[in-house]
Image 1 (cartoon, rainbow, N blue to C red):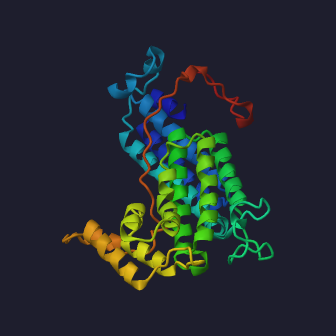
Image 2 (cartoon, helix red, strand yellow; image 1 turned 180 degrees about the vertical axis):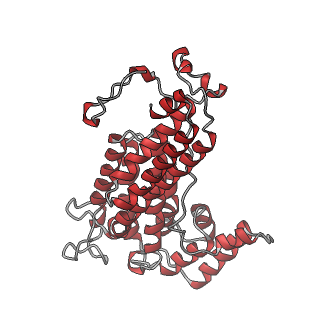
Image 3 (spheres, one colour; image 1 turned 120 degrees about the vertical axis):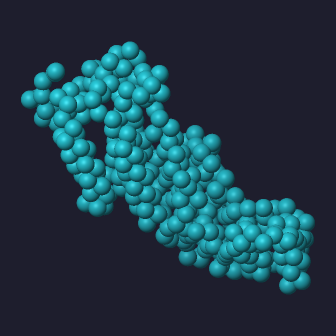
Length: 347
């Protein structure tokens, strides 16, 4: 409404100063407040503000979805295209701030909750064979449980909804969060020989099932988040499958060659009925995967990818969100009394 007033009086210097001040104020929000609520709230606000600038820009592609009344309310004097680019960049900045705080909160939880946690109280999968290492009910419990992780995910989901974050952005946030869970948990598994066995694989799979069920419960099954768990899921399947080259190559399509061979080298057979993993088998698997995936390629990017042991915890999927116009006409908006703007008058 401020911009429409400045447009009404046709004060170009005023609109430039106003939008610059708004941008600076929003940028300072994360620096001044540690609480994750603030970047979430201002992500939602900035996206809506950006869409409103588009909706009332007067551009034909945006007018097509407006009502006649909304088109009458379009800006008359200013082209704010350059400022829309600035606010689009600001959305990415706020989105990254959310992920930064989520990462700081979740990273210490992931390995204990997914790799170490055993559902001992329920007498479930973890107690299938109580004679195996890690299945003794007297052993120290993990610092965080799978339920602790799920509770934190629930808390984030409620916050995103409470602040009316666009559903498509919520989906991308959880896709990124589940990528982080997978990358960190796999990183932990690759240095834990005590967790690389058939019995532990069952428990990890059980913990992962909780995550995929949670996605379905929140209607996030189409967000791409579950696909982000495939590398860790395949690592578990590697421990459970028949130990021959063909079976392993079929199971481990989302793991790099180095990850597959490292996991095989860490695998511990638990009894005489469990398949043994010999150095010769690891060599045959490595040769087969190199032949299948690399062949005679000279593509350095592909070669380097297959040589990596850990996925990058700092990787971020590009943020993409479609234009969503508002169905509310500006003249229908009521200004809350709490804002103390009663001095404003309708023009």
